[in-house]
Image (cartoon, rainbow, N blue to C red):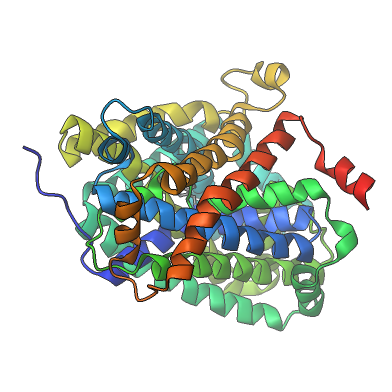
Length: 464
Ligand code: TRP
């Protein structure tokens, strides 16, 4: 017989850990640069709509499945849909996607670790923007550095997950999350005093109608999944450690609002710098690594401290997200194969480390140098593309279809109602309608566009 299932120490502990999973590289590293690439305000607005009408309902669905079954994804679908049902494939897919995402996520987190330590040497002092950009290039193309930092980051992640749900994940998140939000607020306040602040506010919050292509809408939806940790059972797994007294709708809204808040804060830290120093908002994935050190270099000794704090926070944010990815993989072996937590964490963490090595070597071309020529993207980008553009939206669609159409309606209702003060019938019904129609149709349209069966930009052109 397996050990008794662990639970969170408190309701707040769950919310903090789930918010820790959601808030990560997606918010601080990715969101500002895709906002820049997609022209700002209107993209942000559409992203907010996606969070509200697709993200929040699916987050509730994942937590409902997890808490109801008290199992991680594979076991949960088996419990709720029956042993012989194919729904457990959605669970397997989740474990597999967790594997893939963590393997390259850890490489980016490794860059942040490297920048944290480099900050201590004041590496940006007296350098031109080009030279600072070159530092990133140097790191990116170094095999040894990438594998080394990727390994260190995976080891830390394993260390947290081995501690278990309450003593590891919850304890660490309770320290890291508030620290992160506090220091980000301070940085954002500092940015108010920069000359480019007004331009930044205008760029991020004013919907310039001419700047967005319809395909940007699809990117906004895909990012909504990634940033809220949806579509592969991470929220489902965290939900499985819940007791019945948690208010699922309210918790989902709090988590999503916090996540969005940090993403917008990150924009309000970075864009004022970008506009003050006349950089292009379209700097791409290097945005955080290449541009922020420029300003750190301009403010003397304080710059060293700020740089250290900033990159350390980036590491923290990445860590609390990585922990949730590893937990999905680990809990599969704990729940389904009756491994001990120790064994499951060490083995899966080790394999993910090995799995990440090709991604870590993508910049140097030391492994699979022909990959990019053959597939158009390097190994790292291929993994990211497959996971976030295909597997998460597909997983999210199946999860919403499952709870909307397949799950026993009585169980679904009682699981939603248990612990919530939002018992109004219309609210519950609205949620189900979103799961049955709105979310799956939105994802389906994204997939049609990606496969090339429809071209939304053309349709918009023809219609208007
Ligand atoms: N949400 C995290 C971020 O924004 C990444 C992440 C953690 C994730 N767990 C996940 C993404 C599960 C998809 C699925 O950086």
